[in-house]
Image 1 (cartoon, one colour):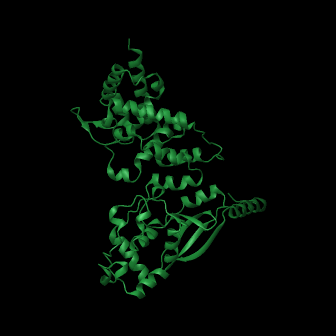
Image 2 (spheres, one colour):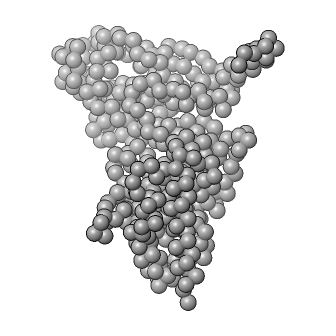
Image 3 (cartoon, one colour):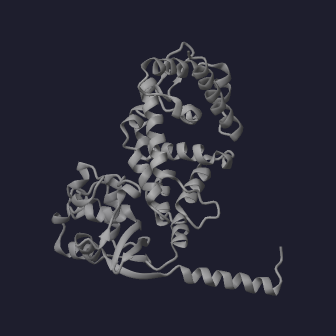
Length: 384
């Protein structure tokens, strides 16, 4: 659609205004300056909000080799938290690798014991003679060269508009390991508001929840999929009408609606109430099916270990209508619900909406939730 001159002028003015709201600065820092700032608490690294430190020893070694050979490297991005105190938001692998080589990762959480020791190079393929060496083994000249190697640091100033800081980081992915969707949300949404993010992380340590999720693949657990499942619970429970088919944008949008108070579709959560509902939901599931809560059943009635997403959304949301009416202290009631939930996993109508491909549409989602809801209601109504 072609714009007239007046519309073009308004567009340019709008863009100029947005540019003014993102205040950035650039500077070149040597890796040794970053190390000193890290030691003094002026350069913060928070792996729990980002990807874990996942680079292999070989990949770390090749990065150090690149620095020694003075190869160019991409910039890193930081947020200015206060005057001259920065928090790393993109570039964790590169900075952590340098700290690892210098034996300085001991202060960093979520780092394996292997990476708390100084890195010994392994897998250098350009100068193979570097393999087997640590920082202390290097000639003094190379130690100094490494210390003076610099990286461009892009600083998002503390007076920038938080929303534009958020959208700016959503567009960053400057190499390294690929982030899972939940890790991206954990890192980016906190630029708007960290309350909901922290709430999800805290609930992921709930023992009842952890027990029902025992069969989640360890690789998925490492990528924070347990936290994504908690996000799914609240998103389906509070904003299911917005869901269509693609789960990733739906979950991100819900998290943004909760975190961004300026969003016209902002969702205000009553955190104490939501916590109580979450805790009772997973205590009920733990008391009934426990670790089998989200397993599917085979043709001979055997449980197949693994968290099945269609079972998760149907069971966690399907019991919400009656969650207040269920007494967790009534052992007979709990046993009855266990038998009921177990039978639903083999119900033909339920399986038609929960098994096989193409079951991620809103129609199938709503139907399987409704089936669980109806069966729980019929069971409770039929009790003396």
